[in-house]
Image (cartoon, helix red, strand yellow):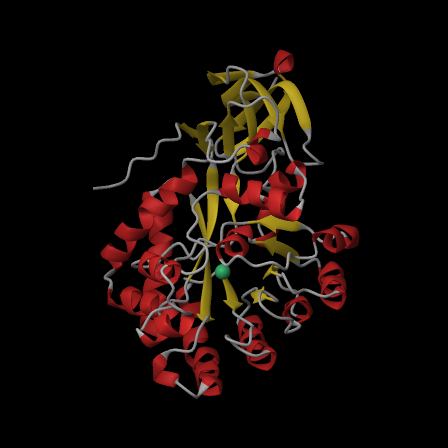
Length: 408
Ligand SMILES: [Zn+2]
């Protein structure tokens, strides 16, 4: 008996992202349950209980934002304005600004308030075809407040149509309670916070900020060793402002990804290539900080390191809630090709989350997460600035239109 699908999306052009763009014009895609069951020419499509006519739209895998700090309270537009009126970083730090202002606001917020402030940012991503996001903790810096952030991150995936991957980023900044005692804070992370969070199931991965103004290579290594002991995969904010050999460190722990990488050297690239660690490129922070050292894209490409693109949505250095803008910036600022940018927002982003077997490309057996676009060709997604051609999103086989309504 011929296959019958629950739902068929027909009269679409497919960019499967299974191999390059994987273009298939005049195609169709069939869904059974929450899985892709059939892909091929529209003329050969199987019967289905429900048929959606895509009206000639392009259909791609749902976009994946694999690096965000999107759950946080307050914002830092006051500092943005003060700096543009001549205030220095020292002035702002003396006035209690910077990351600690976000830590104070996030610690003070209830679960409900933290969720209420975060949902509109997530909705902005979803309106542009995003179906999976990663959300980091890192503004709580106590077990209780980090747990609250991760609980709210999980809640985001229950109230909005998006799959959420959570990451514990306790080693983001040194909390004031541990001032001058960074090694003691790392001990608290390894011996207290990590085991309890691993037991709670609230963290899917563990991240750290390895930098002169963050934590050292040795301190990061202690966090990674503890995480791996608990069976949690690791990733790293690496080589953003200086070379700390963080990429080689995270590769040594078979890390999912090394992120930022503006100051990455060839040794780090070689280590990432050997370990299969994904390079997550974050052009929003580079743009917002007016950085001038681009990540070594050509060398990453030459070494065959998979490159993902993400928003790094955060209140201090990348207040950005648009994957399409991140893709445009990756092409314009760093010379990714539009195909690399779309792969970076789909299959390579899935790889950076350790979920490439389940999402990131249109292949039979993968989850039916799609975005429908009113575009002439896939490059349009990286080309336009501030234009949203998304005409519909499919989450696990369920079609919705891009406008997401927020709960009251
Ligand atoms: Zn980040």
